[in-house]
Amino acid sequence: MESVDLLYKAIYILVIFGITLLIATYSTYFERKIAAFIQDRVGPNRAGPFGLLQPLADAGKLFFKEDFIPARANKALFILGPGVAMLVATMSSAVIPYGDMLIVGGREVYLQAIEVNIGVLYIFGVVSLGVYGLMIGGWASNNKFSLLGAIRAASQNISYELAMGLSLIAVLMMTGSLSLRVIAEQQAGFNWNIWYQPLGFIIFLVCAFAETNRTPFDLPESEAELIGGYHTEYGSMKLGMYLFAEYINIFVASSVMATLYFGAYNFPFMENLREAISDPVLANNVVTLVGVGVMFVKIFLFIFFFMWVRWTLPRFRYDQLMKLGWKILIPLAILNIILTAGGILLKDYLI
Amino acid sequence: MTESLFYFLASLTLLCALMVVISKNPVHSVLFLIITFFTISGHYVLLNAQFLAVVNIIVYAGAIMVLFLFVIMFLNMSKTGDSRMKTSTISKFAGAIAGGLLFIVLISALKDASVVGYNPETYNSQVGMVETLGQVLFTDYLLPFELASVLFLVAMVGAVMLGKKEEGESHF
Image (cartoon, rainbow over all chains, first blue to last red; front, side, top):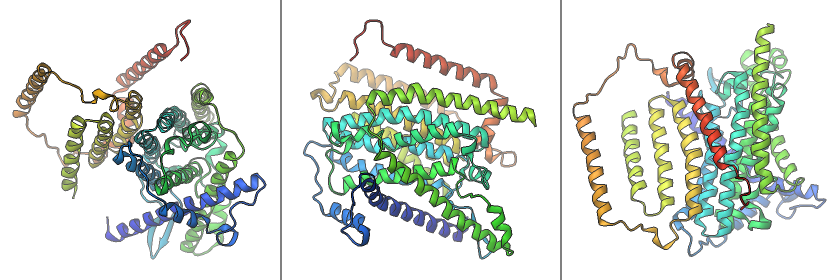
């Protein structure tokens, strides 16, 4: 690879990393604002205009708090836990195509950190690692509530991973590729996968809630019975890291859903916009930049949906959660695969 | 570049694999085993077998090791007093003899082995890619592939049978 390309990739990865952190930071603010709106309150409004500096104030507070480690805790793993959670959370945004191709000075620049022909599997692998941060932290705290939280996290993640993988398989059968860029390109214009995979999308959405430990699936950290679950013993920025990793996971899950089911950077009348501009290079760049905007609008809508559900629905009971995962979602996902296969065969037969 | 990367990964793999055995704390052992799986996946990537690398992580690091960690955390072996398992002298002898025998067998097997090179002209660097792998699995090795999936199904049914509650058994 040329050094210019390498430099560009490095800059792009840093930019995506920065955007991820920024969105995660402001998710905390919007979560509180949306909660306040739903509960008919005002929400944070003291720090800066509309309380916009609240996340910075929170971060400052967390950093300056005492960094406390319980006496009987496993010190190394106690520190490692939040680190693993953050690392795994930020890893998966590497393969997501946030935009199509820009042409800068005759050079084609793809708005994707790495293009691998196993992108979907990569994301699936990283998602399956997400539970380690919780498990390590929960166990190392040497607290039975934390341990219970860690164990709940593990069994919940494993149960919902299966349904998630099965719902992904239907998408892969349609697109015939594991590369996220190819999947995004096939949904050009308004030809989004959601029109063909409504059931698969709903299964994936439910599993995404479970994998990110969001209400109604936030049993690993349920405050009522486990006093915070796996992060009961955590304080200061280590707790902040766990909460932060959750918001990064929401952002990544939203990007994945937007890419797989809602056409990634594609938007209706894309080709009309491309033809309306005479200069092909300019046309391409304009369409790409609008596409990036559209992609982020979709992501923000999904993040809003995550928050909306959190402040609307109560938490599941643990046996209900297991029953939903194993007895409803997995059979539905298998049914979805059979339906998709039938549809593909029928289409081949008719044409 | 690739060569130095290989040596780095190989030494890391061996170090972590050793730490799996040496660690006193079973949870540490499991975590080192997870790192070992990652470094092995790194080797697969160096061999241009990305599919294998990711599947290795999904299946071993993502699923099986989570269950291992789960069980070990539940049993909480490190906290009960006898965490340092007392090994009698006779079992140490038995272990040394068994390990030594395995070592001798390995040495005698590898003594006459020669490194099989590859032909740069006919070698296909895309052989580890998922498309090629799928093509081979569903044409040349269709029967073994399908038989393996039947075997998985049988194992799954067996697991469900074992996990099922007997008539009259108490709910815990």
